Image 1 (cartoon, rainbow over the protein chains, first blue to last red):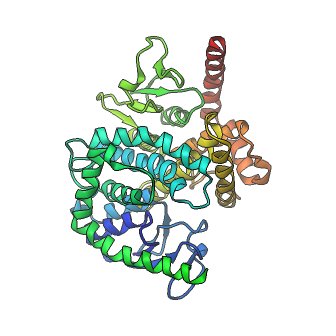
Image 2 (spheres, chains in turn orange, cyan):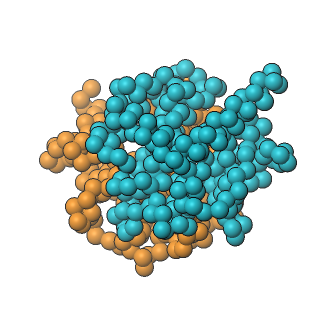
Image 3 (cartoon, chains in turn purple, orange):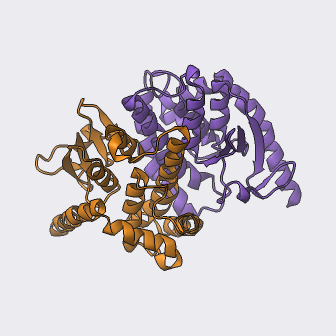
Length: 213
Length: 213
């Protein structure tokens, strides 16, 4: 499979999951500003019409978009890695967390905070609404190592999203269980490897665009 | 199962899906302002910590939250109704649309537009970003009756979300395939029944709060 990613974007959750799953994958970097794939300079809109990462090309050549869908697909490709719970209730619990992270944290809280083009009103609104979500997450994570009973693709997504906190005004000191969880996730080998690969690529991305200004 | 809902909220997608599935359910109305269940006046935070609908109490007494999770759980309870595709790629395609509707439309576009407390900056930002999402949806729906090959829980969710357009500045004339899809969905018996139940309840909800001002 081919994973289209941008450094430190939510596609890092797919990289972490692919690592945990032990499946073979080719990683294709997309510049989130030019929406072109690095190397060949091809227009990424031909892969993902909205230009969003991640996108996954399966071994059968199908293109999948949307983080939650790709994460569950990767988990399903490697049942031995147990990256998704089994049974109707287990699957529902995983989907519940993927949905919470995707809607309440990623889209409603972090997207406006990380978008330089978002007006101050949008950022303040996101911060205010987000506080109750972070408090609820903190309550859930207290005394837990993972979102569910063991590491799942939802943890890969949550670690990726929480990693963005450094670029926002959010202070994780107010959410000690979340802060501890993030520190533990960053130390997890698959997450540490993903950061070791993507942090330098992100710095190169910034340098590329700084050079053009 | 018990479905906790608020009239015309995204929980209507679960009502439509429960109808299509033909499973037995009790519907418990939540007042979205007071966060109390109608009838007994109980604090809904005891069911859903953030006070969000929908929540589902399964026949085994488990509480599930988050729309995408509940919709897939309902679909799984009634395989004969075929409300979710089978196979890894089919499931992934369903999850892709549930995720797109939940993140790009519901949370990023409609939530700020429908929230009276959202500042103008947040609304303008949502409208501007949302236009490309609606255009992409329009392109996908052209020549299609449903999001996938047949009616799925993703259509129940999309019909519910698009139904909110009337309360926003969005003009669906610019997206003719979306407009046609919404008209067709509103005429579908399960959707028509849901609207026939929830529109009067919504009017009662408005009247309840207007009386208090």
